[in-house]
Length: 287
Image 1 (cartoon, rainbow, N blue to C red):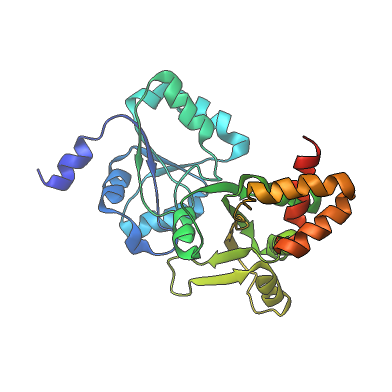
Image 2: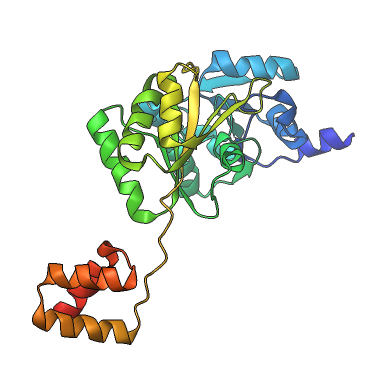
């Protein structure tokens, strides 16, 4: 028995979450190919799409289409043989479950105590982060935003609250709208727009929100297809430290002058911005 046959024969019953290429077929791991070969059937998004990958690999398997609207039905369909079958879960491209159906399916396995494992591999989320050139030590993923401009704007505004790099999946139809909204509130923030990742025509646009929006308006960015947009958080300002002497002077000035006059005097004497002086003065005044 060959090593390949041994691996396939030793696959345990359960669910195999398998990452597939996002553009370059060579990114598919040997382990992923072995598991795709060894499972009894494959649950996928679009069988017409997935069969192209399997044909290239010379693999013939029964394919079951999974979507948000039919997930409960699919779970019922396979429930009688979940624990005695090896079932693969793939998406059209990349890592399953990331902005794709499958959550309820995974939960059904967990509740029954049936094995689940992941066969890691390509992911547009991770690849775009690596190529963005933006801070990625901490980030938050939003997936696809609502198409409604008002709701989209509400989410973008809230990104400033957590101070993290934000990642969005966005279709070409909504890209201009999204960048326009970002430019409206965060024109100086850096963004990165990634398309056709791992393919020969892979394209990354980097720059401020205003510069990227200008490119879109000038038709310098092809809006066809799907994109990953990454938005950097606003740089945090260094905390202004005011020594006790200045604080004492502010306290004395407030006894003689109005808040506005005190701010103006301190600003002229210290070169600390009026906004920062105001914040400090308010705190002292309210004590």
